[in-house]
Amino acid sequence: MNKLVGKSKKNLGESIRQRLKNLSEKRNRPFDEILRYYAMERFLYRLSLSPYADKFFLKGGLILKVWDSTDHRATMDIDLLARTSNQIDNLKRIITEVSEMTCEEDGIIFDAQKLILRNTQTGGDYNGISSSFSAKLFTTKMPVLIDIGFNDVIIPKPQRIQYPTLLEMPKPILLGYTLETVIAEKLESIVKLALVNTRMKDFYDLWTILRAYEIKSEKLIIAIHEVFANRKTPLQRPIAFTRAFYEAKETQQRWNNFLSAMGKQQVKFEEVVLALSKQTSHFFDD
Image (cartoon, rainbow, N blue to C red; front, side, top):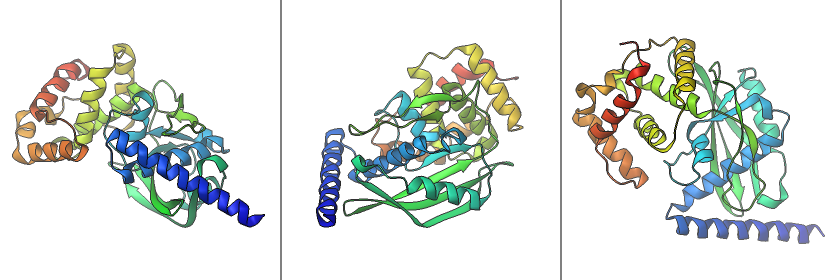
């Protein structure tokens, strides 16, 4: 009986792996990327069923998939805001418990035996926790990376989201960022990093979001003021919106490399920055 059960699980994992491979070819995306997305998706599903579901809020690149499941930049880690103790022992216990939850239909097994957690400096006074472990689907191992932040605000409040699945699997239903908070945080990052900014993804995400969605100005203004105040960042026009930044050869090369890595059509960085400057100028004090 045990042999039959083991064979059944093996066949399931092999079948799912093939379906994911077919999907990668259909979407013209690297197979490794699809596998990692699948691992992250299935971890989020387990988290959504756990007693800790209301303590963690999805943010970062994966929250963008909620609004557009296919057309955005790739991300290789799970970004979460936590409302729990930031002690490593506490987070190790939570991640281990979630990893050990079973979901027979997705064929994936998480291995938290070699879970590694470390403190990270995310900028300013904001410390976070970075964790890494692995997942296995059939014979394929995938790394799972989770970045956990603390102390940030979500305006007006966390929203309940349904995370899209790659295959016909049970969907994670969990709490996440609002679009206004995503915009506010990315704008704050651009202001804070000034001329030393290497985060091309923030410019790309902001440009994409503001082109694709109608954002209610009054809600966004509140979110921007709250996020900047919470992070103690002056609400001033970004230096990155000046020629000194967007015309710099290093910046333009970094932007072109960023687009090439995503397989995106080339667009001039100056065009992106000028569009952002025009759309956000009324939010700043000067």
